[in-house]
Length: 187
Image 1 (cartoon, rainbow, N blue to C red):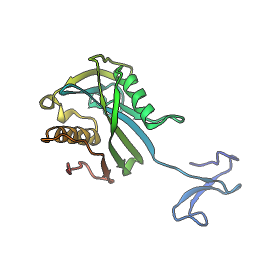
Image 2: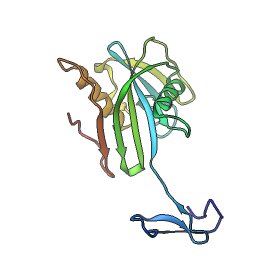
Image 3: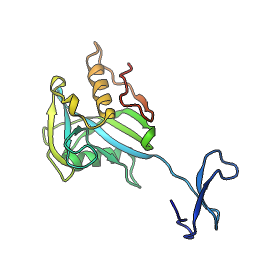
């Protein structure tokens, strides 16, 4: 950020009085410009014993598989964003069960929220953001072709939770720190 969005004068980076972090502060009007993490919302759609994945038609990670998810828009709840992203990317209508994984991705200032969802009908398709959509059984998941560590984590948790004698799907809180390439499954 170089200029204030309030008065167009230059900004500098400093710790404002009463704060404890560096912020962009306008040298003219004193406005403090806070920068906050972006929220990504999506679904882990389940149909019978299979999960729905999308092959990305956009960067980053073009051609890799992911769950339908994307950036939350202003004026949306996380649930609404997850449903919208699933419609947009997979042309699928799902029923949300519960919030399943919350991942803080520190090095890119994002928080990813994935909902466990039922896909009642085997209806889905492609979009501008998706090359292919497909239902996968656990043994068919293209693990080496998943777009993001967070997606692999959510899928591993789901299959581990589903395999329990009494399946339960607790909310998982995860944190990925800068430079951390893989997050180990912690159950």
